[in-house]
Image 1 (cartoon, rainbow, N blue to C red):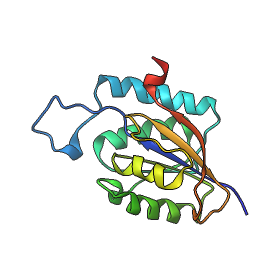
Image 2: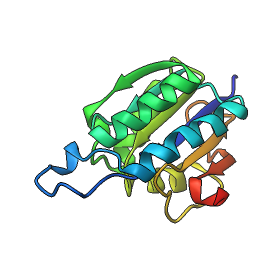
Image 3: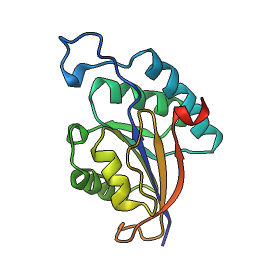
Image 4: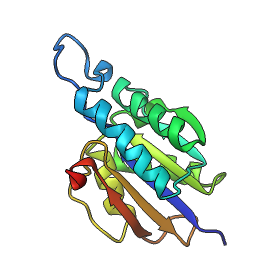
Length: 159
């Protein structure tokens, strides 16, 4: 049985400057534009190379995912089910993706991502911050048992 790896990535910090924009259309703010390349390089230096990056199509998540794709490689797909998804929906998407790839990165939003981590990882994280990324390794590809936390990276850890 092969080991499967899940990377849970919350989108980088978004802008609230234009209140006329819908939540879906909010872009990254200056901090988000700075943080995501930093985290992408950090992951690259850890030899992180997801086979597949699944992202919410919301503007801030899409931009975050594109940075990871450019830096880390892998196939990039956008899935409308990720936006405002419950942890159960995210779990089903991850399970589906790991049927055909060894590693997947899911780029999306809280609270779903933090709850997904707590469902699947042996290390609970109350809140994955913006631009935060968690790595989880699974010996059982069906995700029936909790996986082992590999890392938890986020920009403020380095400030």
